Image (tube, rainbow, N blue to C red):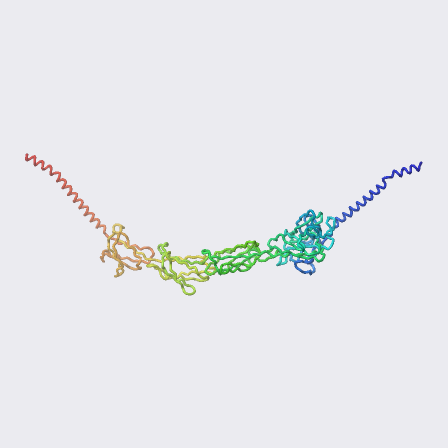
Length: 578
């Protein structure tokens, strides 16, 4: 009976094996989770690049000098937008780093993600549609096999300094010209078609490349630089992230020329013989931080040809000043500098800067001293300086203009003759043209000269009024010489040919009726009026006429009265007879 109960109890221990199995599975699961956690948190540390470490493809040299730069390491991990990192006390390179100074070797650029769908690129730098990567899944180790890390940096082709510009895009091609799409694997796999520089002007390719030949193709140009040629590089050995292959992309700073065209301001014809200094109007600094020209520095000289055209050599982009250095003959220098900007070249060549040249002009204007609006034509002048003097004459307006005058010279203007009866000064007028072709600070100047003519007006008025008396014979004498005889017309007679001195006027040839006058050398009209009692003649004539009229009137009245009396007398006589 007891044996029966023992067998029954053993049958009741049915769940023991199941419990043991579940415990074993739980232990195995915990072990897997622990191993997975250890795998996820085990991230290798990468030291920053030695500034002289790694092969530089652009330099074509396998030799590297010993590094004297040993910053503290920086820890980086892959993130969806490219490379990310956690600072480990690293040091940021100085902005004045030379081309040999490589920024942190820890992957820190930004690459443009282009997620690929379908049969996307495999790991290991394979082209579109396949590759030789060690694995495709996120859990696979992407860096196994003969692969090398690549670090790209932009450098100035002239100074070899790093060009610190972000967002300069590149594509990567293999030697068979197939586009290479690379991947990052943490926390998820992302494929990249384009690779962009960071603010430091550098980037890592997001995964190692299998050994072989590759080519970088620039998509966008950095500001201030021309497009780069395709950069070919070879991977012949394994490079790790701590010591990658450094591929330099040499870029030449953008340059352009300055052109000028000199033309005559009035005629529009080319002006030859000029030159300009090209002066930096600011510190000209290229994007690599190199000071190319200082403010105020004369960069070069532009010399104009026989057609007035001149062009500089290629200059770095920036703001400049054109300052006239050599002034063409017979032209005045520019009053102000010309501000120009050198900009990046385009398909259309920039037009030349038009320079309007103004001739140095000296105008002489000769007028009447009394009337400034009356120009004196036909007057002769001698212009002298260096060499033989030249003779010029005034035109109908009383002017002449000199346009071919040399610089740094003083010209003497001497009047040689004038129009009839005009008097002029023997004094010379001096005019100086300075080194800039200016006369008293101006490219054009006018010298105003006047000539004098002696004007004498002679008339005769009644002694009781200012009325000019006509029909009087007058004669003008100087000493015993008769100058002129005329009959008055009721207006003064003006003489222009008289010299200064003493004259006298005789009326009606009667030397006892003499009027003395003195002519002076003055511009104003000199008026001389003789007086006469000629009005008494008019009074006598008027009185005589009046008496005649009165006499005729009395005679008329007497005759009329007699006619009235005659009929009455005849009537009385007839009455007496009857």
